[in-house]
Amino acid sequence: KAGVTQTPRYLIKTRGQQVTLSCSPISGHRSVSWYQQTPGQGLQFLFEYFSETQRNKGNFPGRFSGRQFSNSRSEMNVSTLELGDSALYLCASSKGQRLNTEAFFGQGTRLTVV
Amino acid sequence: ELKVEQNPLFLSMQEGKNYTIYCNYSTTSDRLYWYRQDPGKSLESLFVLLSNGAVKQEGRLMASLDTKARLSTLHITAAVHDLSATYFCAVKSWGDTGTASKLTFGTGTRLQVTL
Image (cartoon, rainbow over all chains, first blue to last red; front, side):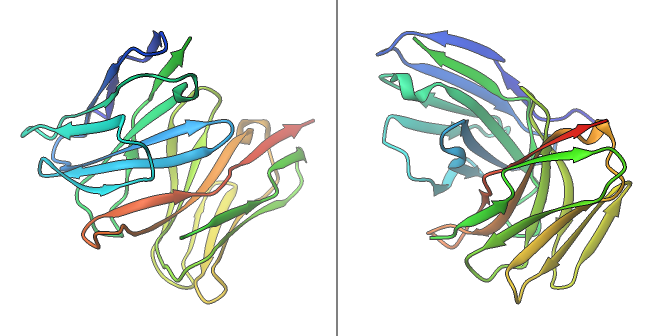
């Protein structure tokens, strides 16, 4: 059974550019969540999508956005990149949104902004 | 706002000895998850604790949940080098809309096992 796939694995971008990250969830999983991991702030929730709708959003500026497609694949976009956006971005998929549904994480995309 | 605290932040363990990581959280919840992360890698699910008094064991690791005390512990028995990694606890709660859940992570505990 294939796991959660994130592409690309590594990215280097310049300040002011925009970037799109992709996440393919486990087959049959309809919920996709995104998390940002930095040494200073730890793991922080970005947003969650279910059935192509954003159901939950963390405390991040509007530069961070996302979407989900009908096949449950999700993309997140960060516009006008800042140095502080350098982080490991993790995507998690789960079957649903209930509290007891386990989340499985992808390998992550490491974004470096220079 | 839900807060999740772990301690210690760093734990240097001697092989063969026993240790415990503590995870405190600030709101009532009975959905707690433990993850392991190796350097530069993703999060690997270790335990899912879904009720008060839940206890799960896998090899040298045992996790428990006390929802009344808002405390979960991860106990390591007879530490071995393979257990060196960062361990996170996470509490699952409903988001602001009440229709979707999210994970709030602790700060992580970096374990280093030495001979």
